[in-house]
Length: 398
Length: 83
Image: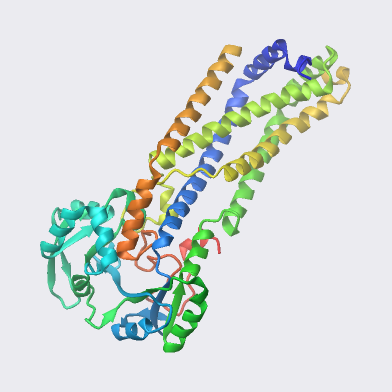
């Protein structure tokens, strides 16, 4: 097979001449393909990166979150709810969570205030590793201090709060809190709008009483006991909502799933439109191509040879567009942080979020995109060529 | 013309190599460790949505319009996340 003229140097030379003869046409098609593939690959890179990062954090998610509801809305839970939870067999750790949104202006910019109990060993150790041993000691000894995310930091700098901020509590009093340190930029995905305070200070800022918590988290190491524990917790109170880690895991698994719903619809519409445009474009140069194919047939080229030549042209265009499109998408997402597109996934109504996406390439997805793009593309080119190639050369050259 | 094609192939190869080198040399463990430590501290793992006041800040929480709480809301993120 390798001795066939199709693999010879003259054939390859002829192919390059043919290819560059129509370089403007090919450049136009490559340009359109690059734009489509750039957008598609950027969206997929962002979604796979976010999904990867969030799946990593899932290990730290509490097994159960217990919330109190009133009229279908979440309200603060009383701290005395924690005692009966500790008594449930299988439950190892029960801890309160204090968090809430602090609006700088009503209906305006907001921060996520999180109260952390630094006496809790797990939190203490984790923060010690994150900040460094001495830094944590300085933080705890320094009075009213906070750790802030990069989005919060940027906002405060723009508004001339360089080393402190005055929080207005619901009691109408101001509380000045110094900025101790910024959270690492690598954590922007979850910490961009965070303000971490000691738990009692967070209560003051959010206006919560001592006997209130936002919700309660607990862990049950044995997964087989989860259903039993969930039922027992639900039976304790009439106004309780129990969210399990499994619910969160399912949400993350299907996050930004391009196979579902709106994504699939848009994807199919784009591909079909693209194929139609291509087919029209290649069918338009009918007369020129008809003559050249007729000439090749008259010179003794078989139909397979003609199709092979056009296939090579098509695969060159496809591969070039795919490589350039996906590479540009990669640079845009993982090099520049996807400046406009990230707003679709993470929102842009509050603080700016300069997320550093972790490069994740799902080869299965990329291969699927290539095949879905390449096969209709090649078909759109080869079908008109085949129609001409099977006609009599004399008729084709007319 | 063969030379032109070879130049294009070399440039594409360079592009792919640059992407490959960046991908392989990226320190994922460092990022994973920091995010995990922060999640362990705060017990919050939801992405930091840049939400308006009427939109949910956390994943999986339905948006409620504070002016019309009984109205069925179309959360913008419903169009992004598959269910």
